[in-house]
Length: 88
Image (cartoon, rainbow, N blue to C red; front, side):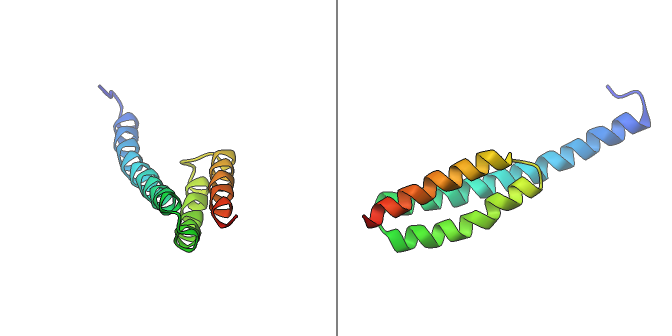
């Protein structure tokens, strides 16, 4: 249990940040799943549209500090490679 006002405030702030960060990560995962679903269906144009929607969301996650930049770069690169393979 917190014994200082600052510790109580920190607990409240951490709870708020957790909610915000959790929602952001969930939104990113949803976008990635949409891309993967389009790839699985074999529709390159739909996959590319979903990828273009997912890209800024993932980069925003980096700016907000919920994901590491190299993680996002790796995931985007792998998704893009899979989308390009559909056309070949």
